[in-house]
Length: 354
Figure 1 (cartoon, rainbow, N blue to C red):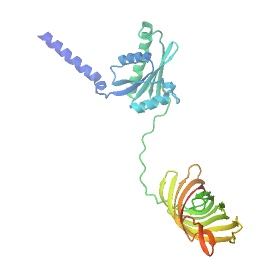
Figure 2 (figure 1 turned 135 degrees about the vertical axis):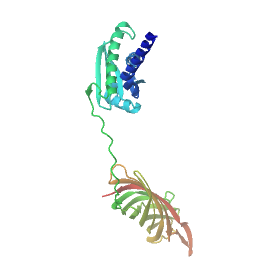
Figure 3 (figure 1 turned 180 degrees about the vertical axis):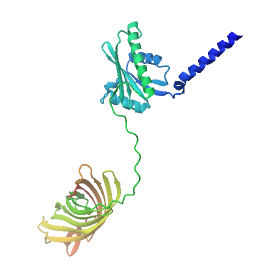
Figure 4 (figure 1 turned 90 degrees about the horizontal axis):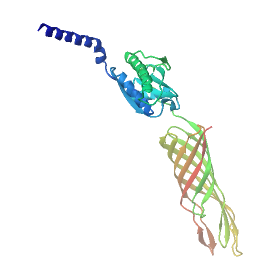
């Protein structure tokens, strides 16, 4: 009876001693370490490391992929990215150099890198290979124990990341002043005017001012002359116009700006008639004017330089008092060309901000 009680007491005391010595390790929360596995030998080495580190509070996870030093930024940067992606305190990898095998254990949170090299020959799991593999596994175990204790081994290759800075206090900022800038616009235009099947084409020049909520522009349009021929006459018609526009921005996204506006001005027509038949008496050349009004939508792209932009314009012009071309026969007017009362116009060009 006395012997049994003594043996029981020894067991209780031994269990209490084990708990006292190992309580800290058992109470520690497990943490993650990631091993980059690029070959079958790497997997065999990882199993040796797991066997030597089974008593540590570390979860060793394998990540298949290319060798760590195969990345463009080097092994350390790849280890930092792996640790951040997997939330790991340590990243380890193996590098084969002939008969020698190198193991690297990185602790990116403190900037430490631990490196050990051993002679490992033969195929995995052979006797000669196992001797060198066990030596490397013991070295990795020492490195993982140091990381667990908060004192990583090796050299400092990168400073630890700074602690997160507190956000600055919010300060009310005044509203930005409207941006006012003058601009010069040069481009080409084309319109369906109803006089000629091909319409009219020409050059456009404008000067303007762009504010935050309003764009003002004065524009001059000049068109190439066209010939309106039939069996009796050849009419040379030249057109031009001067317009004033007021545009309002309605969409701004990145480098794009869209505006809608209204313009009004005067369109001029210069007509010169040549007779093509003996019985026709051409009327004298004449200058005519018409009132123009209409809307426009503009889209501007300002990307490569702050002083230049590309612009496209689609407008519709209503002409009041446009000329009607025809003949006078026995005192009666015979219509030949009436022109379009509303003509769409497309313009493209460059905007310069001096």
